[in-house]
Length: 260
Image (cartoon, rainbow, N blue to C red; front, top):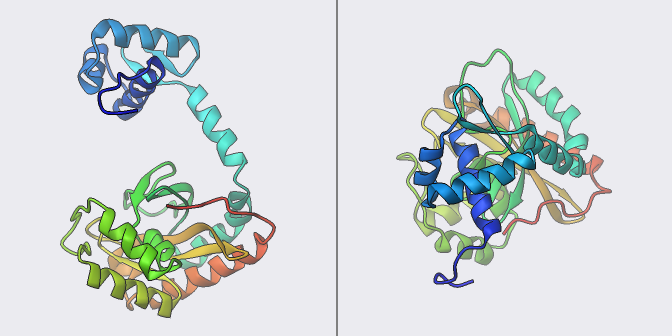
């Protein structure tokens, strides 16, 4: 489809659905602004999405929200990811041993997608890491762990093709620094995110692999002052050992996470 090709009705419906999800509790006017479609088009698509139980309208406010049908589809997707079931008990043990939030991601396109999380219920830090969230590879611990498992040529090709954003003053944006970081990651056996995605948040990460294929990424995230207190050594070794354990238990799985 070229830029001049009109969007299909299905594409427009998906745009509306995503706008409802982004707004969480949003009215018709806001949806027309978010999508750029006329109110009549948005209203028609909302009626269809409502009949199929993907959105619901609050009778008191007339605003729209995602319906539980979306959660049903997400649950079916997660049930098909065998790596989640294998990883969950190891993630729980890792959280209890470290006292920090443990995340599981899969790689889709040029992003890491969080598919499972075992959080410390006593932690008050709110982070970008949540199930369903997406993060770029070049500035996240899990992303750098994945890229370090690739050849330099492939990883550098990805890096140079990205429209990179300086999320914090620590975000690595030059090719030389990026390749050096991947070399350090390979030497350690785990990757670091030293406040590169979010100020005050640190992360250590390693990949889960089966038969030479990367299945997923595992990370520990939390306040940088705790995660990286010793340069990340203690947390890094812990996440590396947990990733190896999950990899061994997941040896029967095939490539659930392909990456770019």
